[in-house]
Length: 160
View 1 (tube, rainbow, N blue to C red):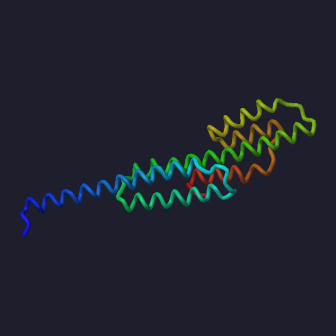
View 2 (cartoon, rainbow, N blue to C red):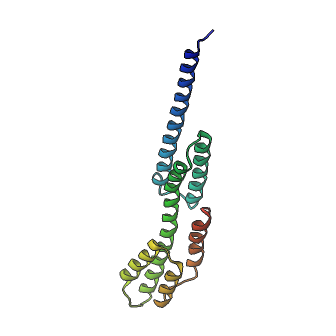
View 3 (cartoon, one colour):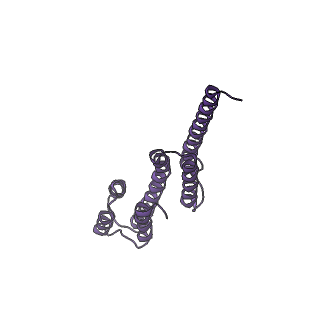
């Protein structure tokens, strides 16, 4: 038969091991989040969707480990920040294409200034200001609308 002290010691060891497993799981999730946002950046068109799927799996893992909501949010935010960056970059790239087309068709304007201003507006993300600015420059094209819609949806729902 075990003494009360021995049972308490075993119980303490079990709790210590459980906490170690939780910490290891959180570290694995943190490293995975880093990899999801940094490695393989030259992937296919569905990269952001795959990043969301990975984020969801990481969240489930951390919840099953009993991680705090703060820890789950911190790790998930790494992925979400990169997805939002990518979505904004899609708008910047499309704007670059539009301005290049305008220049090559003979329009005269300061392309670098337009590109810089668009990146500033994307950084702050103000859809209305982006559209207004591009229309003022006579550079808004309908191809931008679905790209801006994706950003808006992601900001609101954290899904695509």
